[in-house]
Length: 209
Image 1 (cartoon, rainbow, N blue to C red):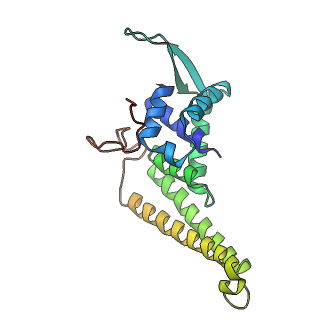
Image 2 (cartoon, rainbow, N blue to C red):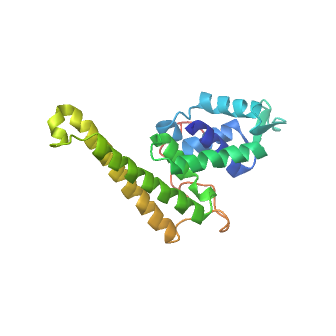
Image 3 (spheres, one colour):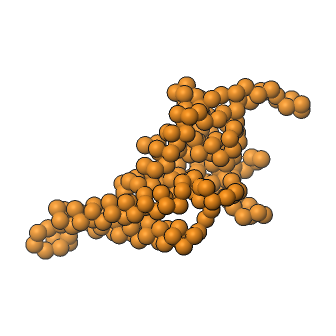
C-alpha cells in the first residue's frame, strides 16, 4: 500500500472538500513530511492522480477577491471513500507495514468504529506473535543461540525485538481504546486539529500560513 495515498485521502476527507495547499498544511501540521514521502510535489501529484482514477472529484474554484490564481478543490467520490477505508484497515491490520504506513493508519484510526479498530489491532497482535514464533522456529539455530551465527544472529534478535515491541505497543493501544480513549466514528463530534490550542507545530514549514 502507499502511505501518501492514505494520508491525502484522509486529509481531504476530514474537510469534506479541500485544496492542495490545505492538504499540504494539514500534513505538515502532523509532521508527515518528516516521517513519510508527503512532500509538496508528491501531495499535488497524488491529488491529480487520484482524481484521474475516479477516487476524487475536482472542483475549480474562482480566485479570491484579493486576487491570485483559481484553486482546485477536491472531495472523495464513493470509490475514494472505499479506497480510503481499505487502506486504513490494511495499515492497522498488517504486522509488516512500513512505519509511515502504520503511522498514517494510527493518525486516522478515529475514523473507524471503536469495536472494529480494536478487532483489527487484536488481529495485528496475533500476526506479530505468529511471525515471532516463525522466526524463533525457523531462523534460530536448532542447537545453541543466535550468537552462534556471529553478527548475522543480530538480525534474528532485531526481528524478535521488533515483534515483541510492536505487540506491546499495540496491546497498549487496545487497552486505551477499550478504556474509552478518543472519540471514534459514530461517537460524536471531534476536532480535526491535532495539537492542543495554542501549541506551536514544531514541524511546520517556516513561512507557511
